[in-house]
Image (tube, rainbow, N blue to C red; front, side):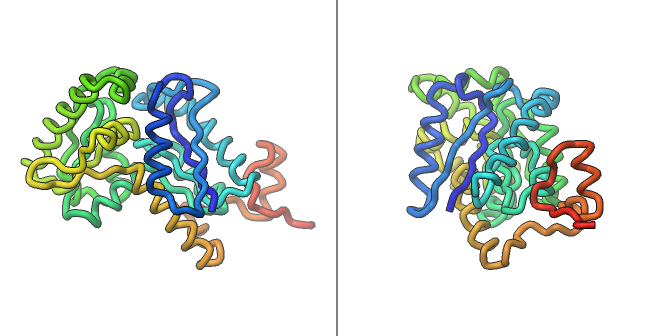
Length: 271
C-alpha cells in the first residue's frame, strides 16, 4: 500500500518538524505500507490560518493529487487542520482521500462523547467551527480554545529547544484543562505541528484523564483502513453520487478543451 501524506508546511521553513512527522508516521504505519510525505514547494507553507494563503496553496495540493494518481498511490492524506481541498480532491480521485480535521473529529467521537479543539490562535477558530458544522458534529463539540500563539512558525523551536517545548505544552494544557472543565472528554490539538510537539513531549491526556488525540496517527491508520475497504468494495470507497460526482462522459471532452486534462478517471465518449 502506498499513501501520499500532503503536509501544508514549506519544506524549508519548519526545521525539525518534517523529521518529527516522519518519525510519528514510521512508528505507526503497517510494515507493508509506504507513506511518502510531501510539503509545499511552490509558495507559502506558513500561514494557512488565513483563507487567501490557504487558497494559494490548495492549488499545489490538487496538482500533487494528480501526480499521486499517475504514480499509482492507493490513498491521499491531507495533513492540515483546515482540510484544504478535501472535497475537490474527492471529486477528482479514484481512491480514498482523508483530511486531518475530519478524521480527527470522527476518531474523537469514538473515544468520548464530546470533544474540543485546542487551536494555535483565534484565527483558526472560525474554520474549525465550519468543519464541525460540515461534519454534522455540532452536538459533540464542547468548544474551541486557543493557545494564543500568534506566529505559527514560533512552534518550530519546540522540536529542538526543551524550554520552548515546555512553554507550548503548558499553553496547550492550560487551554485543554479549561475545555475539560466545560465538558470536553477528548482534546484535539488543532494542527499537525502541535500534534507532533505534544507527541514528542509524551502528552496524551489532560486533567480528569481526558484523552489528547494525535490526529497524525488517526489520519495514517484510518487512511490504511480506507484503502483496505476500497479494495474490498471494488474501488467504491468514495461515493460518486452527487457531492463527489465528476462530470459525465458526455461532458468531459468539452471540459478538457476548456480546462486541460481534468478528471483523469473519467473516460470520454467515443462518439
